[in-house]
Length: 105
Image (cartoon, rainbow, N blue to C red; front, side, top):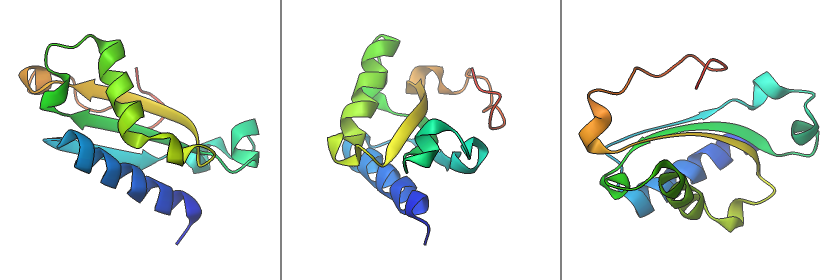
């Protein structure tokens, strides 16, 4: 198993344990960044889309902070970049559909 796949699985596990998501998608986008400075040093690129009640009523910055805290510092060195989309349940049904990789907001 590729190292970035193991990292993707660990990210998903940590988010499930800490934020109890109603929906979660963690995508390894590392291959699209081959040759990028961070990729040369082993850090992966990941996209996270997560729906969690923990985000309800929080500003976007605080929602993203919760994701970073859930992923945790043990992942330092394994992650070069995170693209994060957080959605509170009250906005889940009205949220636009996920964008194809590389076309996110």
